Image (tube, rainbow, N blue to C red; front, side, top):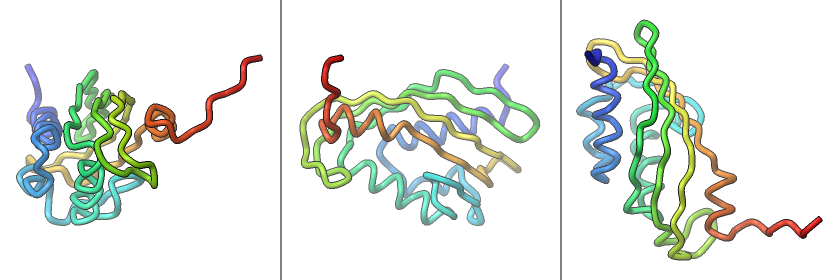
Length: 137
C-alpha cells in the first residue's frame, strides 16, 4: 500500500507531466523551501519548471523508485522530451532527450515542504548537440 507522502510526490510529477506548473500549489506548501535545481521557494520552483517546459514542452517523468524514510521521499526518475525551443543558448534541435534525475522531497501535512532536485544536465547538453564529441582513441 502506498503512503500518503508517496501519493503526494506522485501527484507532483503528474502535474509536471501535464505541463501545469501553476498547479503545483495543489501539492506544495506556500512556504516550500527549495534547494539546487528547485530554486529557493515555491515561486522559484514554478519558474524553474516553466523555464524547462518552454524548450521541452512534452517533458514526461518516468518515476522508477520512491523510497521513503519518515517524511522524506527519495525519487529516482527518468525524464524524456523533445528539444523544441532554445535551451541554454542551443537552438531547437528536434532531438529526443532522455536523462536521469534524483529528487529528495519532504512531505508534511499532505504538502511538499522541502525539495532538492538534481538532473543530469551534461546528458541533456550532449543529446541536443551542445557538446563536442570525443575524438576516437
